[in-house]
Length: 102
Image (cartoon, rainbow, N blue to C red; front, side, top):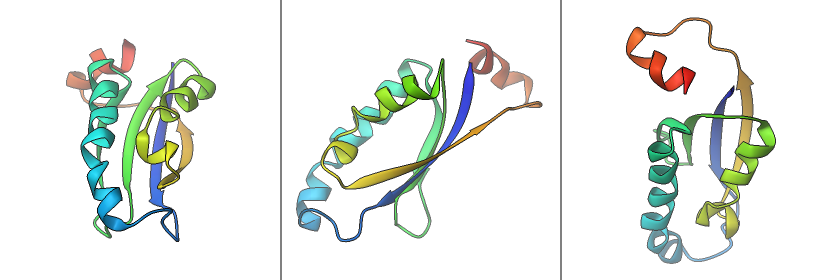
């Protein structure tokens, strides 16, 4: 299993009006929830700056993670781009061990 931090940032300029971006937010949140339910995503949330968000995720390979990202409606519409950083967790609280080893 490979672990990742994804830093999502809004594209500048946005490819559509802000109201259209806002209308897609429920679908974007559902994309994240699908990842949580599938144990791909540990947590996700917006940046304080308002310019995107972070996701902590895992996948069998980077390619598998990119396949998951490709299903995000914000990514599909060119609203967000992701900077992906792979990391190796060497220590974490016991309550996360189930997620880390799934």
